[in-house]
Length: 309
Length: 241
Image (tube, rainbow over all chains, first blue to last red; front, side):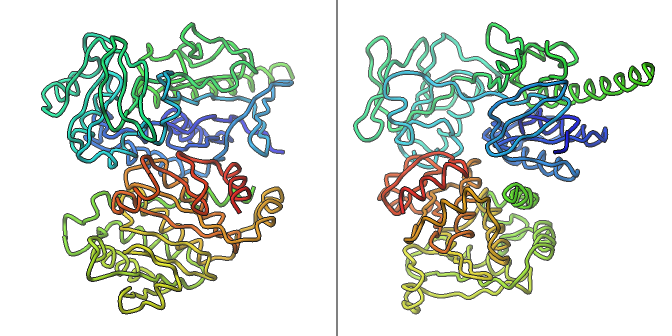
């Protein structure tokens, strides 16, 4: 079995930019991801990635993928189950095969945070949704609720307001947060009503969603509930390899994107990097820095070996 | 390993400008832009092996997207000599509509080297355009080889299995689900797929109680929302057959 120089785990902005730079550094690299394009492709509109003006997440990530595939770098579209290290070689277990590599770069991103309230799981696909670009069509002239108050929630509310009759934004804090451009669009949209200081404690319904119950006892009657309350890191293989994790659950990296384990680097939303500012532009940068660090480390190893001889 | 190669090949095909709105703003009478035509022509030329028939079922009386779908498929037809378009009005060609069990229009049936059983209802816009191109290319080829473990499971399916995938043009997870379903249609005689654009067929979607995409329905009795992995999917096929 071939031993790759580096196995890049994850196919979002960080993983793809890492793959592109790995190819240009002539590293023998592989990208492993069961969702090439990552969660960025679900973004309705991206208005802050330099050079593209306004572009949908799907289109931007198609361009990323297109760029990656212009290089001869293998892409394995499978789930990573575990990783182990023996004699400086990592073994990564996938669904039905193993990949070996000298370095691994974890760029597995985040997964959607769930409300964790009664009714949420029961009504998934029956009114509860985590993908506004997928399911907004089903709520034409209906009433919906968006749970959350950050950029993703604000964007979701704006998209839904273009189709739905009425949109409630239900947020636990007293002010929406995120980019002021989005906040302004939400609070000036006549179809959107923001319910501040409000916590959803139950999703109600019979066969389909009929409403949500708030902590103060109020019931808001809606046909659909879009959950946009952020994400949690997918620290793939962190326990297997003894990787240091921050209190909030992110992989701790230094300024070279290195973790506490030799040979393991991490980049993108899964890490503590970029001062915790999770953006496509910061993720792509971290992926690139990680590859440069790996490349430098490999070069240093060669020098050491030569001196020993 | 075969799967991996197949997915790499499939993913090589990316059309730069997607047909998001279903119209070509520079020329309203056309659907595909000139730059996309050049790209698609190259992809078809490099990848189509055998001839492919595209059967397009339309209706003059009750179809809002038949006209633009016909324009699109005619434009595709013009991009490769290996593609042959056959158009049928379902009122005038009831025998053909019955033969291919056409429930909705527009319907696109792709028949390549063999009839692998791949059908698409609605205007294939947005993110659903690439999977259609991929289905056309795959249909022009022989059935793919599959890993032994999956082969064993597939060979236990001895009854027809129809997989319906409900999608929308703006759903980023849907194309992958369509690819998974079409893969099994390609490897097994018993499995067929029907892709339904939920945004166009609201009543049909209501009939199946669809409120999220992708939603997969197997033999009208098994239903699952969200993306299903290629290994997990085969288990649902076996259980539902």
